Length: 506
Image 1 (cartoon, rainbow, N blue to C red):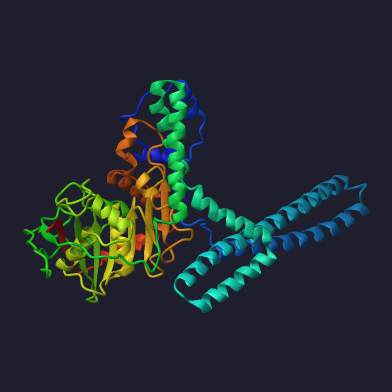
Image 2: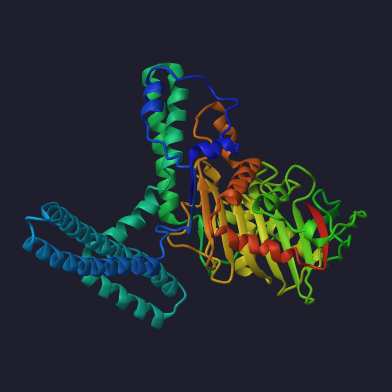
């Protein structure tokens, strides 16, 4: 699904304010000639290849069938030509038309055959990528039997289709190394602009330094896989003491105000809130869900606990991104210290605070949970899905520095800006699609221009991701229907309890 750049601009996706004027000299040359990867909103299944191999093969079979049908038509046409030739003195124009049609049918048959062969070869390429991914997973899991079966199938395909194997390796290499094109372009132009202060030589060296530095860092992240979290990943170490306090909800309130206390934490009681029907509390769209992620207020976690008509319970947890630039010793657990810990696979105080907030809201082990999270919150949500005690059925991440292989039981929705360096820490994401059927990745360039204010990371703002979420809602892509079904199901609830929680170290 593609939404063109004009639609993206109309949706508020391009921030024009605060940009520098027209560049001069070599800056102008670079800005005018550099390839731009701004293709609007792209929604895919994720991974190095985002193609359903079964669909490819069915389509290839369709072209083979079409070739057979065209051959049958050609035989009938040839018979008609023979009849017309017997009376050509009366039907010369018909004979000529039949001859032209016969030639065209032959050409179309050749085209159909070539397309069918190309689709079959493409299906093999994508199957090899999928087999590689499955083989790596089986090896990491210690499943020798599955690894042997997958390895044998891969070797069989390689022997039959050596060219397809070369293409599969190329696709994986390109995903690992060449994914950060927009970051490199903008970094280079930014470096050129800064260096131009010292003349053309400064522009050249500035652009080269920043561009090559960006490419090198991105290549390392992509090849090392530091932003890809495997299915068996678990946070190591322990968190410090955290205090979680309930605060008055800023978003839509529930039908049963108040929260249950949690052990080993200090929990305040939220003030009374006005009653709203559950259908009015449940988020109606991805954009509405993104708007509930805590931001500048006191809250760091919002929990909506839904009691369904059959008595079962579901919860939606909204998790904030980084709120403090402290590296060590800050009061707010949502800081750079937690960022570094989570990205390196260690337990953070923000993760512990999120679990404490869920307990304070009365969410119990085994309850169905849907996660909507931004930036650092995306890392927390990934580990809730991988190692938490909850049945995490949905993980929506916006601008997350990681992508987790959450397994077939979790619908995974990742929203990324390709010009967001924080999202770039995910290294382009997994080499294969992750999550349950219907999972998807939505990407776009948020701000294709370059300027001094790029240092403030405009593409990583929560408000920017909320704009992209609205574009996803309006895209019409059929995969979005799966996420919408989650929200529709929540709207059937009989009651909703809402709690928002602040957190502090100590």
